[in-house]
Image 1 (cartoon, rainbow, N blue to C red):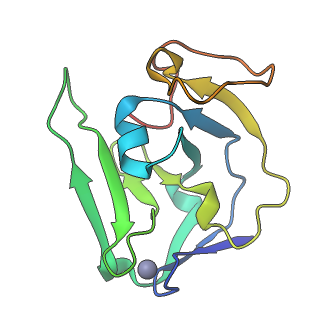
Image 2 (cartoon, rainbow, N blue to C red; image 1 turned 30 degrees about the horizontal axis):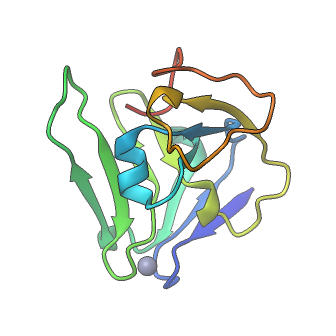
Length: 141
Ligand SMILES: [Zn+2]
């Protein structure tokens, strides 16, 4: 079992099933949302996820549609602004920001998504698979 929390510690959650490997999403929207070179994303099925506290502090932002639904969404703690788990009822899964985990032991980066939009200042120097746009069966929109 893993636990996670936001920066201020008021949002807490636990994961009781295996997380997917981490995808680095270099999409422009993910870079805007995180302020970084990419958004790291992992996922778990709904049955493997539970809020411990602070669910009521989690705010979701839904960006205007670019093409087709579902819309691009982000979830964050409204007190400290940290990335928070995002529940996707339509796919029965939860997007987990790996940096929110209290112990990241055993997690690995598996691939790069949306590299066509990646930051010019960030070189990808590993040998992991790269996808110009959305990879097949992506964790997120
Ligand atoms: Zn917080």
